[in-house]
Image 1 (cartoon, rainbow, N blue to C red):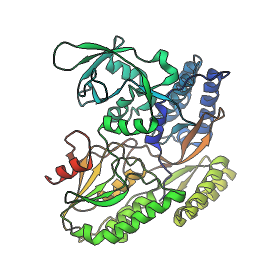
Image 2 (cartoon, rainbow, N blue to C red):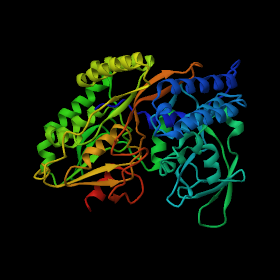
Image 3 (spheres, rainbow, N blue to C red):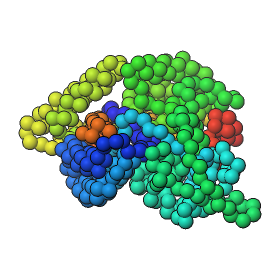
Image 4 (cartoon, helix red, strand yellow):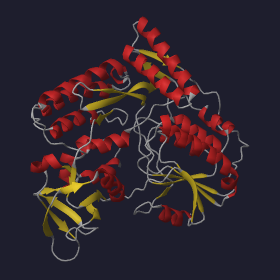
Length: 479
């Protein structure tokens, strides 16, 4: 089994930006061009349009295009172009079907960020100005309730409507704007601190550095992205895996991590508390996930679980998909993932054969060969083992969760994971305007144990606040 890189969270960050108009640019034409191109690429290469088990996908392919094209007609800035395009792609409710913006943009903020709490209240969670204290409620801005602002300005473009709790993450983009979009930015907000009467504050939108924003957004959301490392924090051992998306020169880092887990396995197995930590992990290649799981347990244990899954898929056969699959195989080979590379080349050959027969899909059957772990299996861990997730865990991170949560003695803690559809294994190509790239899936699982947009819910829920290393270690010590 192999899966392409899942870039969901990264692409969500990209869609938060809105850029100023550039002289001579016809953004309405560019928006219409890219929306129409995305429609045709998906129609001709994605399994969704020919998947009879999912009529909603084909319906949105056409209905959503009409709505997005109508929105595109009014585009006068790059921000308008981007909103029209992301409205269309986001409407598929598929975290693997995404667009990525080319280039960078100058972003602005009013000195604070918000999040939505469990009751749906918009509260300030990061602030650098006294007028907007942390914890204060943002009731409305420019006369529009904050809940409506989110529904108009954020969720149609950033939030997968099929994953209810994702709204809690994307809500933090409400007060992230673009320098060139100032006329459309909010002017004033009414906030309630719980002390005295509500007060109105004027919003002073100022530039914010990209790196600074990248640090403040997770803070606003209560998230922390740990380093790729095995480490001990206040007596608790952490195996921290913030990503499985390691390619090229970066692959050496993950290879070194696999070796480090193997080297430290004896210490981890005898520790009183071990946290398998995937905070911030948006996925990547599932072979890295398998190698880490094997280093923690054993090849035989991991294979007993993964071989109990029905991995049968249908691949979409097209000339473009065959070409891009061979390119993915070359990249895997360069990263040292030889098994993955061989599998991709085999699939490309089957795509060509299916096309020659006039078939849109071909089945690659991979039936279960195991019933799971044998009844007498004993975990090598002597102490307590916790699987820590936040809402970012997606794609290959979910494949990792499929295995880890089925190991004996493992307790899932933290926040609900993200989720994905049964469409998976991605490639990325540019759209004709040159302003964006489309990432789409090549295959559809037929009998996956997780359904579309189905997430894992923890047995022990994170009590709240920012998920720092120290706070997690203190919490785990009580479990």
